Length: 149
Image 1 (cartoon, rainbow, N blue to C red):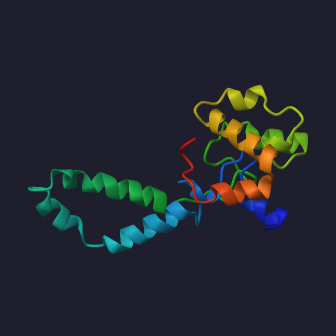
Image 2 (image 1 turned 120 degrees about the vertical axis):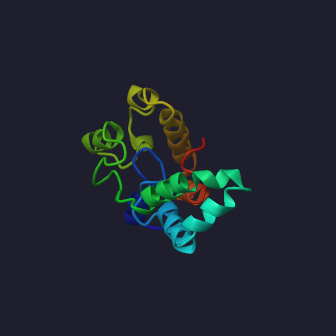
């Protein structure tokens, strides 16, 4: 994978964009869209089945969350800060002239440490990138959950 593709795939903090709930054409959007399609017309069944499957009473809320994921529009924080408007990482990386926090001479810095719970994940990502390189890091994490350490 070339550097240009890695820059599309990985945010400056080390999170893999395609595994984010807000990522346009990301894994979660693709699967949410497919699930919504498969569940088309299920509303009435959910209501009737809720008599013996109580969890189905929450089906409308579940469907609302799937619709939210299906409408994901973030194209990555290198272009915008849509998902987390106050995130200091992308603007800082641009200011410092680095593609990833791990490449910054000030890594790890207080900007990363101050954001909880993501800061801990960013710190781990940066340290891993430094140890094995950006491409190997991407191969290692590209299919892992965006939300676990």
